[in-house]
Length: 408
Ligand SMILES: [Zn+2]
Image 1 (spheres, protein in one colour):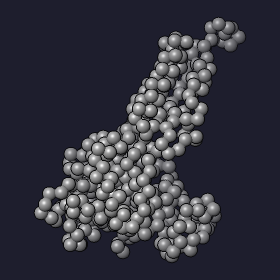
Image 2 (cartoon, helix red, strand yellow; image 1 turned 90 degrees about the horizontal axis):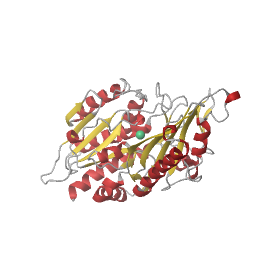
Image 3 (cartoon, helix red, strand yellow; image 1 turned 180 degrees about the vertical axis):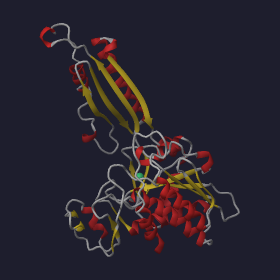
């Protein structure tokens, strides 16, 4: 797999930053720079049905090399990088045989990846790791996933003795701005299930995520000159402030972890005349998710009866759902991934995502899609890094899953 690192370095040097709040997909044209390169490389390595559409979705097929019918499976990664930090002029640094000490990313600007702040890096002593030069993100999220899928396909083509069914690969734009799955053509992709290669450290595997809703509560007040306001002024900020205290104090993001859900007050903007509170509501459990939304609705009703119906308005919308609902009835999807890791001596680390993924959306579009580790650490930051052996392991997991599905 001497190509894997070269591939990764080639991809991270291409700026593919996405931008939020843009209607069209892809949100930035430059995502085509990587997508088009992938199309060329897929064709050159011998993949079939290689396509790219006007929205920057790349798809390709590795035909089956066996006679019997086995499920068609897919692997998916995203080409864009987060708008949180620039992905322009990424200058990856390769540290061979990492010594386990602090890494000076940038001497001039004194940017150091310290073992004190990021102690888990010490685990990678002796390995080759790739970091940034301290001025940009690295883009291992998710170009590590892209490189692993590309490398695995290339390997399978060069090693026909490894038997596999039909394998589909997909590369999507705009994952980081929450739109990667929006225009993904599940029918055209044609897989029974897929895996996103978009997770962190070795062994990470995820098939549960939050159920998510967004709530906007608007309070209307009435402004009157404060000198003559008695009995007339209605200060919407005071009503809103009171409203905001009516949630369980311990059920906030900063006080919850693992499977604990929360209400999160995102923004509070107001004047006497009008105040808006924006909330996100999160829970892995379907019933608890419903009861959280019920709580929000009944609180609004209570305030409406106290202050008048026109004084309080609620907009409540579902954002995404827990993919477990779609994956759990088909646990072989999980079992193949865990078995592949076991055969490769990788200790699985199965976690519930405290967020959403493109895979969650795809699962509800009919393509169950858990998430497998890709190797990146400290994503979305200048301290992002990836150990090369973890990328190799992820590549091997892809190959092994293909093999196991063909054996069943
Ligand atoms: Zn990602």
